Length: 97
Image (cartoon, rainbow, N blue to C red; front, top):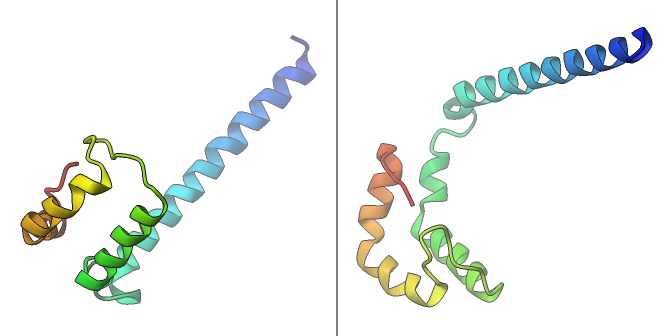
């Protein structure tokens, strides 16, 4: 590899790292400011009406099973039984699919 190519690759790698660092800083800033910008965004996301709309949209789009293999047909009865538990686990940061 000649010197010109080495410099080009090095410059590109450096630019990619700088881009990642800027994106990471932006994410951290947004995360820290999330409560001041939208005090209860998680509450809005987890609102029963919003969750129902999301389910209907996935069903209408013939959504594929999730990582747990649950289909939309299986999801509705499960959600009816476990909705409050699911919301509590998401709010507490203990949700895993």
